[in-house]
Amino acid sequence: MPYTLRFVIPDASSRVLLVPDGSGWALPQVPSDEPEIVVDVAPALHDPVGQDVFVLRDVRFGPMPPPDDAIVYVTETVRDPRLAQGRWCAREELGSLSFAEPHDRAAVQAWFDGDEPASLQPWQRDGWFDQASTWIDEVLPGVAEVRQFATWCVSCILRVTSPRGRSWYKAVPAHWARETTATVLLADLLPGMTPQVLALDAERGWMLLEDLDGVPADTLPIAERVAALEAMGEVHRAAAHLTDALLAGGCLDRRPAVLSNQIAALAEDQTVPLPDGLNERLRGAVARLQELCEEMATAPIQPTLVHGDLHAGNLMRLADRFVVFDWSDACVADPFVDVLMFLTRLPDDTELRATCRERYLAAWPLTPAEAASYVDVAEPLAAMHHAVTYRDIYDAFGPDDWWLFEGVLPRWIEHALACPTVAT
View 1: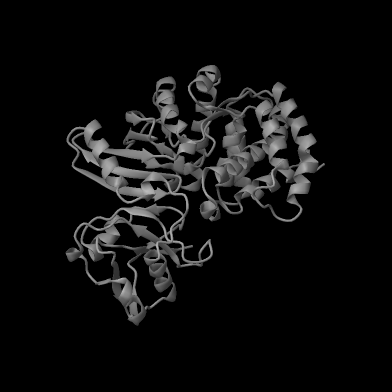
View 2: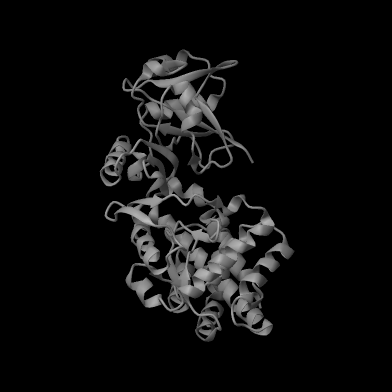
């Protein structure tokens, strides 16, 4: 569904930019397909602001998640308020102004009150963009432009233009700091299958990546996206003999024996509330899930490199191949973890998903009976793998950000418990 993102844009005098909107004043706004990630809004905001702005974070002024069309973000202080179109509102003027939307007033009041989340990522703080731009200038000669492309609590991505063309800067939180070193490692171990890293600051979780100059797989017709999953299967098979190097290089160990302990720990965890009865149902299924983990030791497909968050948006189709990027959840695990994530991000079409799964498995040396048996065991464990991943995400961010992931953890647990090999 379409959303409207609204922006609190301040100046150095702690005033906020407002624009006329029919019956009153309003915050500058940009349409968006999703509320959680701010994507490429700088061009749309340039007209009212008269300059590029850097988005920091969302504004908390009510219950989260916010109601539709009440999603508000705050930007860095603009450098030259004289270029803006509209009016600059000081705190003492707020009560006398008429607003087209009441939640705009509430958001501005929250900003004036200094109401910000207790925990913020570095790129969600004023002044960070200048630090990142300085580093980019140091590692890449002749930079002409650095512009924010996407941001949320999980990452910040900048689009960089230089004499070598376009490249991409990415910053990740401490929870995913291993992504930087894992991306370098994979570029060495699997050349051509993953992006090349142009520069790296592992301590700060920064990296500069080559531009892939291809077609994002999530823009391909649905029927063609199966080729992206088959390409991930090539990665799985190419990395099967590299598990020692992958683990030594920083990829997490999420093999079934490790997952078995993680499932038990998740079942006893009362920190993150789950829907009524789900904790008890999960605890009742732990023994069976751990039996399946033991069965995976003799499965016809063994653990290998797993992306962990595989969907079509994380693959790029080039002229002769696909490239897989965004390795924040890189690990050694059962590869059906990637298959299940990819399938669940396709339209809810049973036949389409079955076709994709069958074409993925057809590239492995399995008989039809072996493939069916493997899926019976692997699917509930893959779902629990994702449940454990999302439980860890809650620890990576403060409660103020939990609304972004609401519902995902219980959905993966429910998926596992609904599988015939667990439900019976």
